[in-house]
Length: 297
Image (cartoon, rainbow, N blue to C red; front, side, top):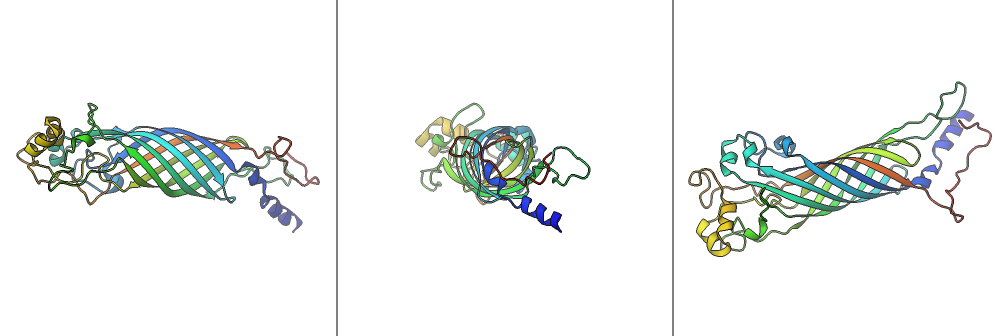
């Protein structure tokens, strides 16, 4: 009984408060789900339409604050590249459409984290008969939140697509101009490994649901070519319809994208987390009281 009570008191202490602030640096992979490219069939929902060969790079910087022992909030800034290309699919309609894009993404987000399993600091050595607790170096957490992101779709050759109004944005019968800044809803899963009391290494993956269908500059239907040339020039018509057989599938009013399905993107990163030690008024790390009657190992 005394041993059980003592273990509960020690594990329930406020030791975690000394390391509740973290700075995180990350790098890894990024990809997107849009109308362009994808698998060798008509567009599928969610990750079933992912094109792995178009995986690009991403970087992040974040600050994490533990509100409770198992609950944290994290604000992050991400930079990534995403792309899509109809040449990489064998679906007859997509391949004939022959569109492509690439875009930078800059995201600022605020998420909440729930740590299902937290690492536990304890005895470094397994000494028989000692009553010190065992350490546990791996933790797992879920996260979800809200963010805003900027994007700027271009052709693979670098031509900016938004100024070309490729679906007749702003013209009679065409859609309204889309914004380059939209909302994103991030969610995902992470695993952390404790290197020591200050450093953690984590693997984190998450998907972003967005409020736009123009991440790839494709959403609705083909617009009349002569009207595009008259309003925005020859470059607009060329970017709007580089189809292999323009008279077969890409006539004015024919389907160009799927406005009912919003675009999304995802990150998978390896992150290095550094815990900031809480300082006392003398500038040293705050001391945590321990039981003097128990040996430390």
